[in-house]
Image 1 (cartoon, rainbow, N blue to C red):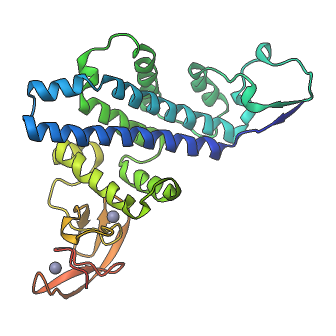
Image 2 (image 1 turned 120 degrees about the horizontal axis):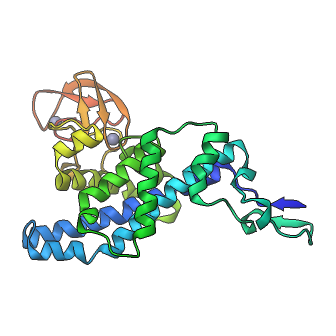
Image 3 (image 1 turned 135 degrees about the vertical axis):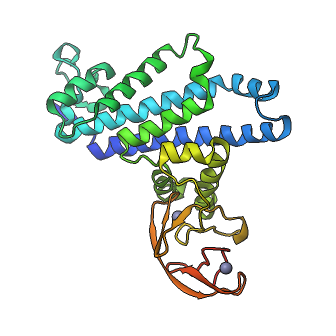
Length: 293
Ligand SMILES: [Zn+2]
Ligand SMILES: [Zn+2]
């Protein structure tokens, strides 16, 4: 029998990133709304707690998407060895009638068997922490239709789920460079692709403001100090003085925690700050005030 539409490891990897980004998108959108509620009603007031309470279905969706992202990543690993490792046993195979069958119509192994299959046949090893987190997400997903305690719905715990999936399964403790890469590659589906970089920078700033720079230091590795402008992922189509500061300057070069790029600098006189300042080699942006030379 001939099997058609056989998926590749890259197919699953792309789907995994897509599900992760949809989870990220949903989360930051909710946090953005939530920051308005805090602004208007204050932190930890009945209004803000009610806003979190009423968002439970959104949070369940975020967890489901994160689980999906991990599941696709695990399938991508197995697929790199052979896509046929994803198929359930012979009992579920179809009777040979037509001579061809689409891969998607065959039953795949259950999520709970993925760990064993990868440990036996995968060409990549995952850490104990990764498998523990996979189990956590699986349990959360399976129980999410029943009642779940309020603690598991805290905004911080949801953000930590996002960070762990990024670290354990997508290979980056810092999720923002993954986010920017995805937005860059998704130009075609957005109406205003020019502003995608702005969106990623604004998300970085918003989440750092809401969760705090100490949390960002401990969980993502972003230093707890004043950051500089990034000359690589600089603001598009807007006033430069609104651009979030996302880069660390070590005296020689900058490293941006939003886009993950390094940039060398040169010194020149800045017309706005006055005096000699460091400028981005890539975009001639003054790292101190954002003025473009
Ligand atoms: Zn950047
Ligand atoms: Zn300047």
